[in-house]
Length: 415
Image (cartoon, rainbow, N blue to C red; front, side, top):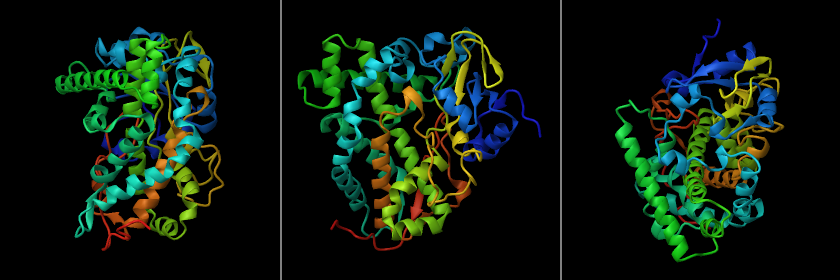
Protein backbone atom coordinates (compact mmCIF):
# COMPACT_ATOMS: atom_id res chain seq x y z
CA UNK A 1 0.00 0.00 0.00
CA UNK A 2 1.43 3.37 -1.03
CA UNK A 3 1.80 6.17 1.50
CA UNK A 4 -0.23 9.37 1.16
CA UNK A 5 1.57 12.64 0.52
CA UNK A 6 1.71 14.19 3.01
CA UNK A 7 1.40 11.41 5.58
CA UNK A 8 -1.03 12.45 8.37
CA UNK A 9 0.54 12.11 11.84
CA UNK A 10 -2.51 12.39 14.09
CA UNK A 11 -5.63 10.61 15.24
CA UNK A 12 -6.36 8.13 18.07
CA UNK A 13 -5.20 5.07 16.09
CA UNK A 14 -1.89 6.73 15.23
CA UNK A 15 -1.25 7.91 18.80
CA UNK A 16 -2.12 4.51 20.23
CA UNK A 17 0.33 2.65 17.99
CA UNK A 18 2.36 4.63 15.42
CA UNK A 19 4.85 1.83 14.83
CA UNK A 20 3.17 0.04 11.87
CA UNK A 21 3.07 3.39 10.02
CA UNK A 22 6.69 4.10 10.92
CA UNK A 23 7.69 0.68 9.59
CA UNK A 24 6.00 1.42 6.25
CA UNK A 25 7.72 4.79 6.08
CA UNK A 26 11.15 3.32 6.83
CA UNK A 27 10.69 0.69 4.13
CA UNK A 28 9.71 3.35 1.59
CA UNK A 29 12.66 5.64 2.34
CA UNK A 30 14.28 7.77 5.03
CA UNK A 31 12.43 11.08 4.41
CA UNK A 32 8.70 11.74 4.01
CA UNK A 33 6.48 14.79 3.90
CA UNK A 34 4.02 14.69 6.83
CA UNK A 35 1.13 16.77 8.12
CA UNK A 36 0.38 17.61 11.76
CA UNK A 37 -3.01 18.44 13.34
CA UNK A 38 -2.37 22.17 13.03
CA UNK A 39 -2.08 21.75 9.26
CA UNK A 40 1.64 22.45 9.18
CA UNK A 41 3.67 20.15 6.95
CA UNK A 42 7.20 18.97 7.66
CA UNK A 43 9.82 16.52 6.44
CA UNK A 44 10.09 13.49 8.72
CA UNK A 45 13.27 11.38 9.00
CA UNK A 46 12.64 7.79 10.12
CA UNK A 47 15.60 5.36 9.85
CA UNK A 48 18.21 5.08 12.61
CA UNK A 49 21.26 5.87 10.47
CA UNK A 50 19.51 8.77 8.71
CA UNK A 51 18.20 10.08 12.03
CA UNK A 52 21.64 10.03 13.62
CA UNK A 53 23.16 11.87 10.67
CA UNK A 54 20.34 14.42 10.63
CA UNK A 55 20.67 15.19 14.35
CA UNK A 56 24.37 15.93 13.81
CA UNK A 57 23.99 17.75 10.45
CA UNK A 58 25.57 21.23 10.77
CA UNK A 59 23.38 22.52 7.91
CA UNK A 60 20.25 22.22 10.06
CA UNK A 61 19.58 25.01 12.55
CA UNK A 62 17.06 25.25 15.39
CA UNK A 63 16.41 28.99 15.51
CA UNK A 64 12.82 29.82 14.52
CA UNK A 65 14.10 32.76 12.47
CA UNK A 66 15.22 30.18 9.87
CA UNK A 67 11.64 29.04 9.25
CA UNK A 68 9.95 30.22 6.07
CA UNK A 69 6.59 31.96 5.81
CA UNK A 70 4.74 28.71 5.01
CA UNK A 71 6.01 27.16 8.25
CA UNK A 72 5.48 30.30 10.32
CA UNK A 73 1.88 30.72 9.16
CA UNK A 74 0.76 27.56 10.93
CA UNK A 75 3.54 26.51 13.28
CA UNK A 76 4.16 29.69 15.28
CA UNK A 77 1.16 28.92 17.47
CA UNK A 78 2.22 30.74 20.63
CA UNK A 79 1.02 34.36 20.45
CA UNK A 80 3.02 37.47 21.08
CA UNK A 81 4.43 38.68 23.34
CA UNK A 82 4.84 35.21 24.85
CA UNK A 83 6.46 33.71 21.73
CA UNK A 84 9.31 36.22 21.86
CA UNK A 85 9.59 36.01 25.63
CA UNK A 86 9.38 32.24 26.21
CA UNK A 87 10.62 30.61 23.02
CA UNK A 88 14.32 31.55 23.02
CA UNK A 89 15.46 28.63 25.16
CA UNK A 90 18.07 25.97 24.36
CA UNK A 91 15.87 23.97 21.98
CA UNK A 92 15.56 27.00 19.69
CA UNK A 93 19.17 28.18 19.72
CA UNK A 94 22.23 27.46 17.61
CA UNK A 95 25.93 27.90 18.39
CA UNK A 96 27.48 30.00 19.79
CA UNK A 97 24.42 31.13 21.81
CA UNK A 98 23.33 27.54 22.42
CA UNK A 99 26.80 26.62 23.67
CA UNK A 100 26.89 29.49 26.16
CA UNK A 101 23.36 28.87 27.47
CA UNK A 102 23.85 25.12 27.80
CA UNK A 103 27.02 25.69 29.80
CA UNK A 104 24.93 27.43 32.47
CA UNK A 105 22.88 24.31 33.25
CA UNK A 106 25.16 21.32 32.71
CA UNK A 107 26.62 21.25 36.23
CA UNK A 108 23.16 20.93 37.79
CA UNK A 109 22.47 17.79 35.72
CA UNK A 110 25.97 16.28 35.84
CA UNK A 111 25.83 12.48 36.27
CA UNK A 112 27.81 12.43 39.52
CA UNK A 113 25.66 15.14 41.09
CA UNK A 114 22.32 13.54 40.27
CA UNK A 115 23.60 10.09 41.25
CA UNK A 116 24.47 11.47 44.68
CA UNK A 117 20.82 12.53 44.99
CA UNK A 118 19.47 9.03 44.32
CA UNK A 119 18.76 8.31 48.05
CA UNK A 120 16.71 11.52 48.24
CA UNK A 121 14.77 10.52 45.12
CA UNK A 122 14.11 7.12 46.69
CA UNK A 123 12.65 8.83 49.77
CA UNK A 124 10.32 10.83 47.52
CA UNK A 125 9.13 7.76 45.63
CA UNK A 126 8.48 5.79 48.81
CA UNK A 127 6.63 8.70 50.41
CA UNK A 128 4.25 8.92 47.46
CA UNK A 129 3.41 5.22 47.73
CA UNK A 130 3.17 5.45 51.52
CA UNK A 131 0.33 7.90 50.89
CA UNK A 132 -1.78 5.31 49.07
CA UNK A 133 -4.80 4.22 51.17
CA UNK A 134 -4.06 1.22 53.37
CA UNK A 135 -7.14 -0.60 52.14
CA UNK A 136 -6.72 0.31 48.49
CA UNK A 137 -5.90 -2.23 45.80
CA UNK A 138 -6.28 0.11 42.83
CA UNK A 139 -4.71 3.44 41.91
CA UNK A 140 -4.51 5.91 39.04
CA UNK A 141 -0.73 6.04 38.76
CA UNK A 142 -0.38 9.26 36.77
CA UNK A 143 -2.19 11.39 39.34
CA UNK A 144 -0.77 9.74 42.46
CA UNK A 145 2.78 9.04 41.28
CA UNK A 146 3.95 9.49 37.67
CA UNK A 147 3.06 13.20 37.49
CA UNK A 148 4.15 14.04 41.04
CA UNK A 149 7.47 12.22 41.38
CA UNK A 150 9.26 13.91 38.41
CA UNK A 151 8.16 17.35 39.56
CA UNK A 152 9.39 16.75 43.11
CA UNK A 153 12.72 15.56 41.71
CA UNK A 154 12.97 18.54 39.38
CA UNK A 155 12.25 21.01 42.19
CA UNK A 156 15.02 19.43 44.26
CA UNK A 157 17.54 19.51 41.42
CA UNK A 158 16.96 23.07 40.19
CA UNK A 159 16.41 24.68 43.59
CA UNK A 160 12.69 25.52 43.34
CA UNK A 161 11.72 26.30 46.95
CA UNK A 162 8.75 24.44 48.49
CA UNK A 163 6.49 27.48 48.70
CA UNK A 164 6.82 27.98 44.93
CA UNK A 165 6.74 24.28 44.07
CA UNK A 166 3.40 23.99 45.88
CA UNK A 167 1.89 26.61 43.59
CA UNK A 168 2.94 25.08 40.27
CA UNK A 169 -0.03 23.87 38.22
CA UNK A 170 0.59 20.79 36.11
CA UNK A 171 -1.80 22.00 33.40
CA UNK A 172 0.66 24.78 32.60
CA UNK A 173 2.70 22.13 30.81
CA UNK A 174 -0.06 22.01 28.21
CA UNK A 175 1.04 25.31 26.69
CA UNK A 176 3.48 23.44 24.46
CA UNK A 177 0.58 21.64 22.71
CA UNK A 178 -0.48 23.44 19.52
CA UNK A 179 -3.81 25.29 19.88
CA UNK A 180 -4.38 27.39 16.76
CA UNK A 181 -5.90 30.88 16.66
CA UNK A 182 -9.29 29.58 15.48
CA UNK A 183 -9.46 26.65 17.89
CA UNK A 184 -12.31 27.02 20.44
CA UNK A 185 -9.82 26.10 23.17
CA UNK A 186 -7.67 29.12 22.31
CA UNK A 187 -8.92 31.41 25.16
CA UNK A 188 -8.20 28.72 27.77
CA UNK A 189 -4.79 28.11 26.20
CA UNK A 190 -3.87 31.78 26.33
CA UNK A 191 -5.04 31.99 29.95
CA UNK A 192 -2.76 29.09 30.87
CA UNK A 193 0.09 30.77 29.03
CA UNK A 194 -0.37 34.03 30.93
CA UNK A 195 -0.62 32.12 34.20
CA UNK A 196 2.64 30.29 33.56
CA UNK A 197 4.38 33.49 32.52
CA UNK A 198 3.23 35.15 35.74
CA UNK A 199 4.52 32.19 37.74
CA UNK A 200 7.92 32.42 36.04
CA UNK A 201 8.08 36.12 36.97
CA UNK A 202 7.41 35.18 40.60
CA UNK A 203 10.18 32.56 40.51
CA UNK A 204 12.65 35.12 39.18
CA UNK A 205 11.66 37.72 41.78
CA UNK A 206 11.85 35.17 44.60
CA UNK A 207 15.29 33.87 43.62
CA UNK A 208 16.58 37.42 43.23
CA UNK A 209 15.28 38.42 46.67
CA UNK A 210 16.43 35.24 48.43
CA UNK A 211 19.16 33.65 46.31
CA UNK A 212 20.44 30.20 47.11
CA UNK A 213 22.98 27.90 45.51
CA UNK A 214 20.50 26.16 43.19
CA UNK A 215 20.30 26.34 39.40
CA UNK A 216 17.43 28.83 39.35
CA UNK A 217 19.37 31.26 41.52
CA UNK A 218 22.43 30.88 39.31
CA UNK A 219 20.39 31.60 36.19
CA UNK A 220 18.92 34.75 37.76
CA UNK A 221 22.46 35.82 38.69
CA UNK A 222 23.59 35.18 35.10
CA UNK A 223 20.82 37.48 33.88
CA UNK A 224 21.81 40.19 36.36
CA UNK A 225 25.43 39.89 35.25
CA UNK A 226 24.50 40.29 31.57
CA UNK A 227 25.09 36.68 30.46
CA UNK A 228 21.40 36.22 29.64
CA UNK A 229 18.71 38.55 28.39
CA UNK A 230 15.43 38.73 30.35
CA UNK A 231 13.74 36.74 27.59
CA UNK A 232 16.45 34.05 27.63
CA UNK A 233 16.15 33.73 31.41
CA UNK A 234 12.37 33.34 31.28
CA UNK A 235 12.65 30.91 28.38
CA UNK A 236 15.18 28.71 30.18
CA UNK A 237 12.96 28.55 33.27
CA UNK A 238 10.01 27.77 30.99
CA UNK A 239 11.98 24.92 29.41
CA UNK A 240 13.11 23.55 32.78
CA UNK A 241 9.59 23.55 34.22
CA UNK A 242 7.91 22.03 31.17
CA UNK A 243 10.53 19.83 29.47
CA UNK A 244 12.13 18.87 32.78
CA UNK A 245 9.21 16.86 34.10
CA UNK A 246 6.39 16.04 31.66
CA UNK A 247 8.52 13.75 29.43
CA UNK A 248 9.59 11.74 32.49
CA UNK A 249 5.95 11.43 33.53
CA UNK A 250 5.12 10.15 30.07
CA UNK A 251 8.12 7.80 30.02
CA UNK A 252 7.05 6.24 33.30
CA UNK A 253 3.67 5.49 31.72
CA UNK A 254 5.04 4.07 28.45
CA UNK A 255 7.45 1.87 30.41
CA UNK A 256 4.72 0.58 32.71
CA UNK A 257 2.40 -0.13 29.80
CA UNK A 258 5.19 -2.07 28.09
CA UNK A 259 5.87 -4.06 31.25
CA UNK A 260 2.25 -4.99 31.96
CA UNK A 261 1.99 -6.08 28.32
CA UNK A 262 5.01 -8.31 28.96
CA UNK A 263 4.32 -9.82 32.41
CA UNK A 264 7.25 -12.21 32.13
CA UNK A 265 9.62 -9.24 31.85
CA UNK A 266 7.86 -7.48 34.72
CA UNK A 267 8.23 -10.50 37.00
CA UNK A 268 11.85 -10.97 36.00
CA UNK A 269 12.61 -7.36 36.91
CA UNK A 270 10.86 -7.80 40.23
CA UNK A 271 13.00 -10.87 40.93
CA UNK A 272 16.24 -9.42 39.51
CA UNK A 273 16.24 -5.69 40.35
CA UNK A 274 19.91 -5.46 39.34
CA UNK A 275 18.68 -5.61 35.73
CA UNK A 276 16.86 -2.28 36.07
CA UNK A 277 19.51 0.00 34.47
CA UNK A 278 19.63 -2.17 31.34
CA UNK A 279 15.85 -2.56 31.38
CA UNK A 280 15.37 1.20 31.44
CA UNK A 281 17.53 1.56 28.32
CA UNK A 282 15.48 -1.09 26.52
CA UNK A 283 12.21 0.52 27.61
CA UNK A 284 13.46 3.90 26.38
CA UNK A 285 14.30 2.32 23.04
CA UNK A 286 11.05 0.42 22.74
CA UNK A 287 8.68 3.35 23.31
CA UNK A 288 10.21 6.75 23.90
CA UNK A 289 8.25 9.62 25.43
CA UNK A 290 10.15 11.89 23.04
CA UNK A 291 8.44 10.55 19.92
CA UNK A 292 9.53 13.36 17.60
CA UNK A 293 12.16 16.07 17.82
CA UNK A 294 11.38 19.76 17.54
CA UNK A 295 11.89 21.71 14.31
CA UNK A 296 15.12 22.04 12.37
CA UNK A 297 15.63 24.18 9.26
CA UNK A 298 17.93 24.40 6.27
CA UNK A 299 19.17 27.89 5.43
CA UNK A 300 19.02 27.07 1.71
CA UNK A 301 17.48 24.37 -0.49
CA UNK A 302 19.47 21.17 -0.08
CA UNK A 303 19.45 17.40 -0.45
CA UNK A 304 18.51 15.45 2.68
CA UNK A 305 19.07 11.70 2.30
CA UNK A 306 18.03 11.81 -1.34
CA UNK A 307 15.10 14.22 -0.96
CA UNK A 308 15.20 17.87 -1.96
CA UNK A 309 14.05 19.96 1.01
CA UNK A 310 13.28 23.68 0.54
CA UNK A 311 14.94 26.27 2.76
CA UNK A 312 12.90 27.11 5.84
CA UNK A 313 10.72 24.00 5.71
CA UNK A 314 10.72 22.15 9.00
CA UNK A 315 12.70 18.93 9.35
CA UNK A 316 11.76 16.61 12.21
CA UNK A 317 13.28 13.31 13.30
CA UNK A 318 11.13 10.44 14.55
CA UNK A 319 13.12 9.09 17.49
CA UNK A 320 10.58 6.31 17.96
CA UNK A 321 10.85 5.20 14.35
CA UNK A 322 14.65 5.27 14.52
CA UNK A 323 14.67 3.22 17.71
CA UNK A 324 12.68 0.43 16.05
CA UNK A 325 14.77 0.26 12.89
CA UNK A 326 15.46 -3.46 12.28
CA UNK A 327 18.70 -2.57 10.53
CA UNK A 328 20.00 -1.30 13.87
CA UNK A 329 18.00 -3.38 16.40
CA UNK A 330 17.14 -6.98 15.46
CA UNK A 331 13.54 -7.91 16.28
CA UNK A 332 12.93 -4.28 17.25
CA UNK A 333 9.29 -4.63 18.36
CA UNK A 334 10.25 -7.09 21.11
CA UNK A 335 10.98 -6.05 24.70
CA UNK A 336 14.28 -7.87 25.28
CA UNK A 337 15.86 -7.31 28.69
CA UNK A 338 18.99 -9.12 27.47
CA UNK A 339 19.41 -6.97 24.36
CA UNK A 340 23.01 -5.98 23.73
CA UNK A 341 22.02 -2.35 23.94
CA UNK A 342 23.41 -0.08 21.28
CA UNK A 343 22.99 3.69 21.17
CA UNK A 344 19.25 4.36 21.09
CA UNK A 345 18.15 7.89 20.27
CA UNK A 346 15.54 8.42 23.00
CA UNK A 347 17.47 11.45 24.29
CA UNK A 348 18.50 12.70 20.85
CA UNK A 349 22.02 12.96 19.49
CA UNK A 350 24.61 15.63 18.79
CA UNK A 351 24.82 19.09 20.36
CA UNK A 352 21.13 19.02 21.34
CA UNK A 353 21.41 15.72 23.22
CA UNK A 354 19.15 16.06 26.27
CA UNK A 355 21.18 17.66 29.09
CA UNK A 356 18.95 15.96 31.66
CA UNK A 357 19.47 12.43 30.34
CA UNK A 358 21.41 11.21 33.39
CA UNK A 359 18.73 12.55 35.72
CA UNK A 360 15.92 11.01 33.67
CA UNK A 361 17.63 7.62 33.73
CA UNK A 362 17.91 7.69 37.53
CA UNK A 363 14.31 8.85 37.91
CA UNK A 364 13.09 5.99 35.74
CA UNK A 365 15.22 3.42 37.58
CA UNK A 366 13.97 4.60 40.97
CA UNK A 367 10.35 4.96 39.88
CA UNK A 368 10.02 1.59 38.17
CA UNK A 369 11.95 -0.34 40.82
CA UNK A 370 9.86 1.20 43.60
CA UNK A 371 6.55 0.53 41.86
CA UNK A 372 7.44 -3.09 41.14
CA UNK A 373 8.66 -3.63 44.71
CA UNK A 374 5.80 -1.88 46.44
CA UNK A 375 2.85 -2.93 44.24
CA UNK A 376 2.80 -6.74 43.94
CA UNK A 377 0.82 -8.16 41.07
CA UNK A 378 0.80 -4.83 39.24
CA UNK A 379 -1.60 -4.94 36.27
CA UNK A 380 -3.97 -2.72 34.32
CA UNK A 381 -7.33 -2.04 35.95
CA UNK A 382 -8.97 -1.34 32.57
CA UNK A 383 -8.71 -3.09 29.21
CA UNK A 384 -5.57 -2.11 27.32
CA UNK A 385 -7.60 -0.70 24.44
CA UNK A 386 -9.29 1.78 26.82
CA UNK A 387 -6.04 3.55 27.68
CA UNK A 388 -6.19 7.14 26.44
CA UNK A 389 -2.93 8.11 24.75
CA UNK A 390 -2.16 11.80 24.98
CA UNK A 391 -2.73 13.71 21.71
CA UNK A 392 0.59 15.58 22.02
CA UNK A 393 2.31 16.17 18.69
CA UNK A 394 5.85 15.39 19.83
CA UNK A 395 5.36 13.10 22.84
CA UNK A 396 3.96 9.71 23.83
CA UNK A 397 2.30 8.63 27.02
CA UNK A 398 -1.09 7.96 28.58
CA UNK A 399 -3.01 10.65 30.43
CA UNK A 400 -4.30 8.22 33.05
CA UNK A 401 -3.01 4.80 34.08
CA UNK A 402 -5.52 2.89 36.25
CA UNK A 403 -3.83 -0.15 37.80
CA UNK A 404 -4.67 -2.88 40.24
CA UNK A 405 -2.32 -4.73 42.57
CA UNK A 406 -2.42 -7.39 45.23
CA UNK A 407 -2.77 -6.59 48.93
CA UNK A 408 -0.94 -5.55 50.93
CA UNK A 409 1.15 -2.67 49.58
CA UNK A 410 4.51 -4.13 50.63
CA UNK A 411 6.75 -3.18 52.19
CA UNK A 412 4.75 -0.39 53.77
CA UNK A 413 7.84 1.16 55.28
CA UNK A 414 11.37 1.34 54.05
CA UNK A 415 14.10 -0.89 55.36
